[in-house]
Image (tube, rainbow, N blue to C red; front, side):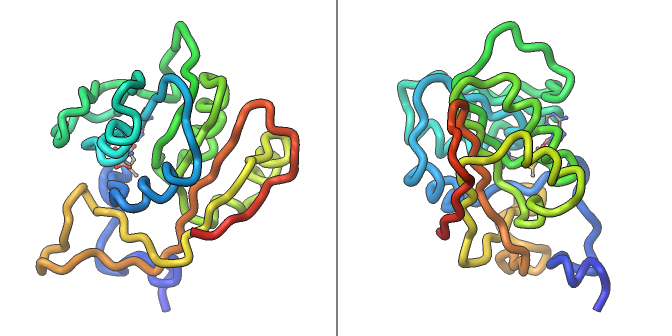
Length: 195
Ligand SMILES: C[S@@+](CC[C@H](N)C(=O)[O-])C[C@H]1O[C@@H](n2cnc3c(N)ncnc32)[C@H](O)[C@@H]1O
């Protein structure tokens, strides 16, 4: 079996440019029904707005800011601003919460920046492998999450934001995903929960 197959990716498809894999609505529903957010919310890698749409449905009265490095269709009318590199952007004020599904290769950098620019919760969707690795071990030691919510059922991110593949079939992934949650001020041990 090839490395890509072992990792749960199709061996015949390469990664999408800028790692654009949209988050299925149900995955965001699952975390928002378990973790409450108070105050402003930044989605800093919003893609076409799959997470932002669900945020708006849950928090119609909250300030929700959606940005992305790339300008794509704002499919759900979330007011997404393109051309914003989250990792280098200077924010004059902090947000209460940051939630996103970052490019996996930059997940640690996104977590660090999100913690820097927030006062409440940081919630990231990532492969369970985000837990491993020497650099991430050091990061987790200094920034322990409050909780990791592991999906017991496979989640199928939408490649390039498309609902189905080139044969009209729904995406199917063998990867295990989780939501990683940090909360400023939380001092306990990280807790693992299952969705
Ligand atoms: C895995 S996709 C997730 C999109 C969206 N959050 C969702 O869940 O549907 C990652 C997104 O990160 C964006 N991205 C990559 N590097 C970025 C950066 N440095 N700053 C902001 N967005 C970035 C990509 O353009 C892409 O839309």
